[in-house]
Image (cartoon, rainbow, N blue to C red; front, side):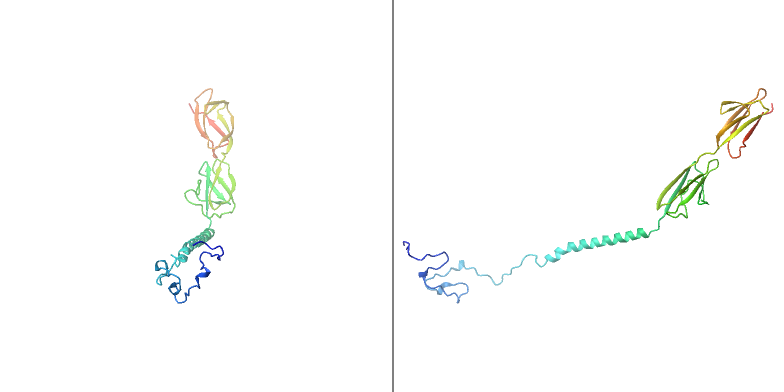
Length: 244
């Protein structure tokens, strides 16, 4: 039919004014319009009726809180355990008594050692095979190292909490020795070197040194002998010509 230009405009989803009153849906909550005059009922295929047995449930809603908090609880427990263990270890190390491990060496070895005037048992090296007893960490000790034929080494040492090594380099004693001969007039060789007529003075001879001497006279036999310079060697050594 042709459109009437004077007719009232209609909008989608509304009933035209001339179609009559709207149907009464109060008797059928699902919108069955069979009782409304002039309106065709809606086919059942297009009516969506929710089932009363349908249950809507979001997946894992009830289990989510327990699963999300579990890693945090475990991590917190590990952190607390680490802190407690660290504090306990720190306290143990702080309360542990410090121990001094002092080693005393000398060159040459075999020297005796005194700490604050107290002689230690044994000779150098000390404290290598067995620890030195009675040492206090942080306490300063006056130390003397003595070896026959050497100058006394003097110094100080302060033990620490841990290993500490002290080395004393000993300087040999030196002395002057005078060689003379009976009868007079002999000449002396020292270690194969001619030093001239006797008496002869040798200066700064190191303690412990062995000297090979050879003395000759104008007539008679020659004397050859080794002389060790030590504390018992007299300042004047008399060389006597052997009998023919």
